[in-house]
Length: 186
Image (cartoon, rainbow, N blue to C red; front, side):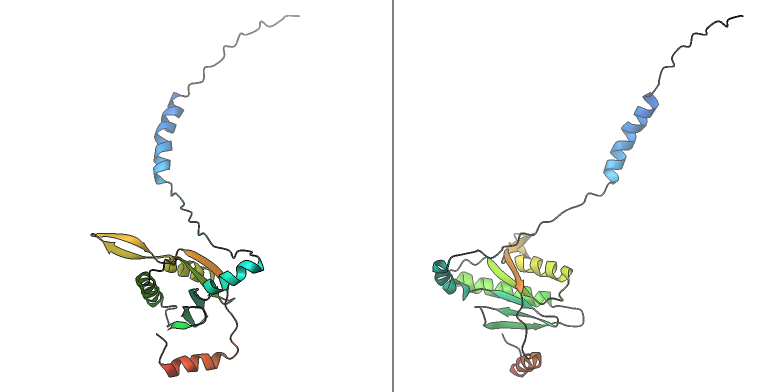
């Protein structure tokens, strides 16, 4: 039997320089074209669990709460608590956020004149208010655009926002009729 001579195989060299050149060009181009996602975190303030001795001290403070009650057809601003300051009916485009911001600016200026530093408000919502409306209300209540020395800045309104459920109306027709008869509360 004849044996075949073994053929010595040489290992081929791997030439990756052209691939590396491609990566050097491709990676920066892809990074420049990538859309970076921006995540915004909204901080919410939850109610504190307090003992009954501290609740009597807080009752005086709670009376001065600023509340924005959001109904499906209107926004109501209450300050102090349970006193209707402004009734803002919604129009065909939705809620009137500009009037809300103007009202909150007036409240902030009034409190500043009295020497009161108020940073918190309660946002009371009906169950069927959609998420985007809640986020927009929080953004509008937190700050507004102001021009200072030829540059636009975000001026602070009420950045500490608490969320809650709006109380149910016993007779909604009487509330809207009463506000319409009064010509809107200001």
